Length: 176
Image (cartoon, rainbow, N blue to C red; front, side, top):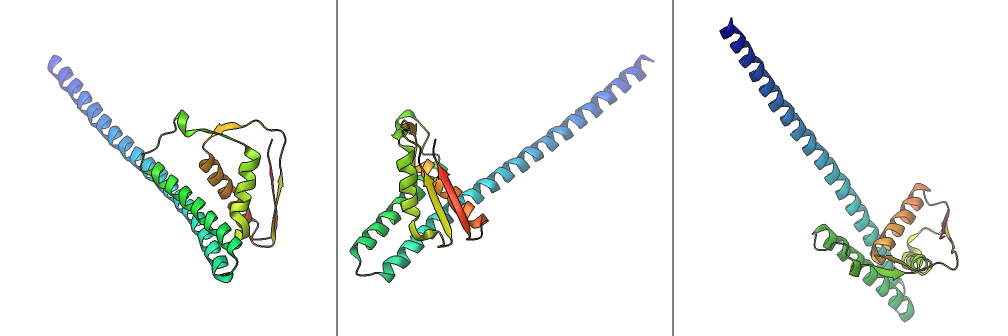
């Protein structure tokens, strides 16, 4: 009877060990699946950010081509191109893990001027049918932030809103 009991106990232990191994394997597969899903979401977000940057560069290049003698338009567009290229470089730097947010990365930002600069940066990118209205709050204290990151998020929000409206409507931006 003792032998039978030991054999059945050993059998139960073997089954428990097998089930535990199967459960660990299933958990590893689930974790891998979740990682791949997160990576896909991240890649889609990065692709979207770069598409926005390329759209601004393309639009600026077209305006430069259309106005080869207007030095002011050319200067404005070249500055826009430089700004979005810097934003793209910041995205790549973050992707490579070379940057960590540290206190020296944060600068004091005036949100009203950030929104104003972002709208100037977008310029003619939005279709004529989409109106963008900015209602700044005043006075606002300066906040410590990563300016390029905030500007890229605002650009994404504006372009997504414009796309969602299918080119017709008004986008209202307000600070507070």
